[in-house]
Image 1: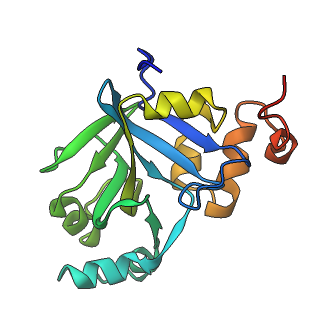
Image 2 (image 1 turned 90 degrees about the vertical axis):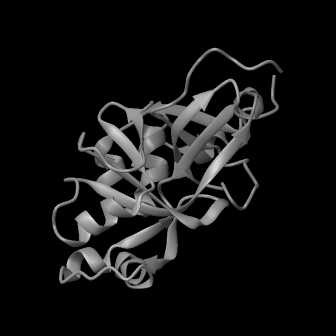
Length: 189
């Protein structure tokens, strides 16, 4: 299937119940970059086994903010799992940032983590280890196969809503009150 001209950056992907891939079952991912070469995103509703304090410690960054250090780090996807991705708001310049859109940025440089630890980071931020990636045309193909729904990004969902509520809440934002009612939809004429 040829690549679509529809850019999905700054959109949420919501896995449909039939998606059996354990990396993406019942996930919500924010698409951060999408072009003719493929797409990259971060899963925003799956916890990793790490806290932000553990990440700081591994990087030699100190912080006295117990609440910040106790924050759960997300499992952002199966690609580059050793690499940190900070999804945040605020237009401050960091060493390595990608503008996602709608006031959201994805930063991969150490300076943002140091600023967060010092209480000088963005107002809203989540840290993920790993990301999700799709080759040229792969995401468009998966959308055509009814593997994903798309929804507008929602800052409250990304930064405030408990992880376990994000999947159904994202679907509800586009009028799907129960994702499991869609379980038998795929493949029927």
